[in-house]
Length: 60
Image (cartoon, rainbow, N blue to C red; front, top):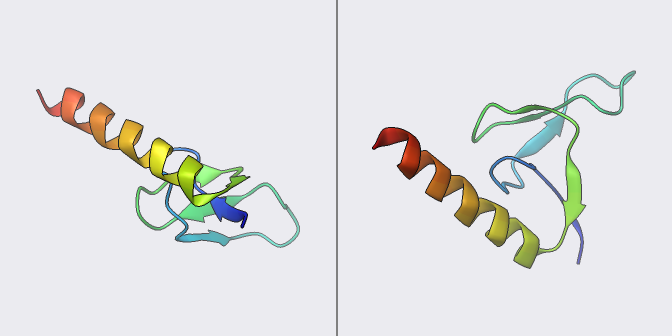
């Protein structure tokens, strides 16, 4: 099953913020704003793992 997911963190907690502009979405988990992607849960999990790893590296 395909879901709309955040390309930065893999979250499905995204909302379309400007109806006149289909590409403007916001992620309520990482504050990403911009176009989103569609993918399955496996893709979302992979993106989320990469996001968590990049956050760990930033804090070191």
